[in-house]
Image 1 (cartoon, helix red, strand yellow):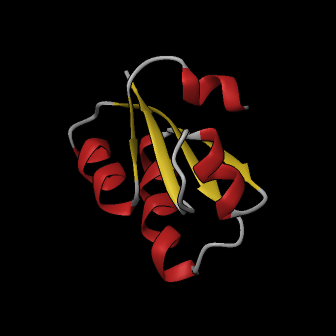
Image 2: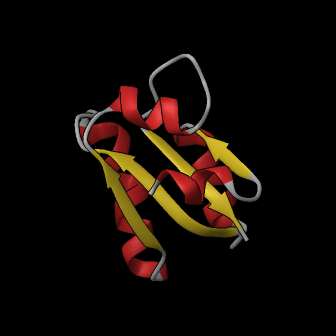
Length: 80
């Protein structure tokens, strides 16, 4: 799971993830299970419509660590 985040270009956070989904530049999205629904629902809904793979992390701390950042992350995406 973490290896996909380490390979290639990525974006981190809700705004960046949504921006690149809109540009059809996202291969895979990563969502933290413990993030607030109002943060992740829009991303999940759009990914389902556009058939973008979603991989879930147990918590925001794990996702942040996998993204190689020192803060928690609710969402991230690997770019095409």
